[in-house]
Image 1 (cartoon, rainbow, N blue to C red):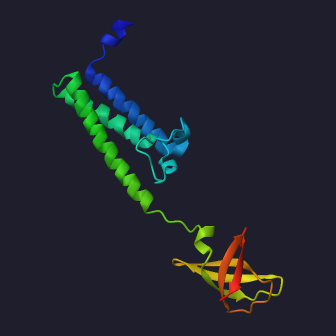
Image 2: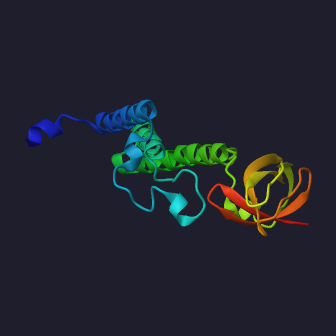
Length: 183
């Protein structure tokens, strides 16, 4: 068995590491987030820590690290460095390229927008009745949240009628219906 391993040079080992990292990177790019759910840990899911976005320990970023480690380790070995200095060069290069990919992924994540309206966003806001609310019934109100206009089914808090184009205040949210009161 030892004769099998003795025929591999440091250059071959580093190239093998680079190839494994590259194949894993291609597989994770083609199959998407399949590997992101293997071994769920807090390191892989930074959104559990409150800041969202990709983790430095995600499959794609780690595969970039492994590919760069093996590739630059092989290059250093080819230039005559020993195994330990080549490993250092590979580690530093892997860290650099993984950091670049991580920074780019964080930038892309920060550019995402959401049109989700949460309960906290609408309660206490002013709205305008766009479909009159009959006594004991429901109508429709429109509220501006940021740059978006949000239409919601509405019910009057006192149960009375509220005519169209009346300014109201959103008091509460009950499922998909908001409870409003006159201003």
